[in-house]
Image (cartoon, rainbow, N blue to C red):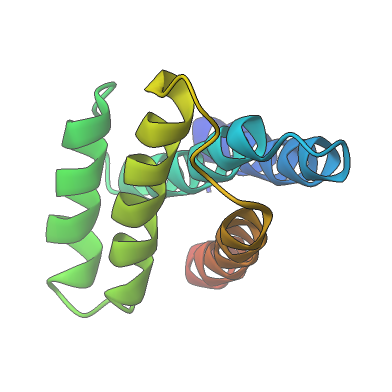
Length: 124
């Protein structure tokens, strides 16, 4: 595993922790953002190991899908987790009213944790 991949995995772990802390403080919108970014960093880490990168969200989403889920290397549910979390993050970040509830964020954090385990398993 290369250095950048390790750093991205660590960022993902920190983002999950931050999401949990924000949720404990009843800040579901910002917790949703951190849960999404955990998944984003994990997708980045995986594609980074293939020698490919993209700094744009859409590029990372597409590359992850092409390189890992469409090929059957990783369960497609993780691509769905990433895309759904992105949509929730956009709603949470750009809406004037709270649009993400606590239960949704709990689910996002659980998905991010599951994604982390899958990424770590793949990268070993």
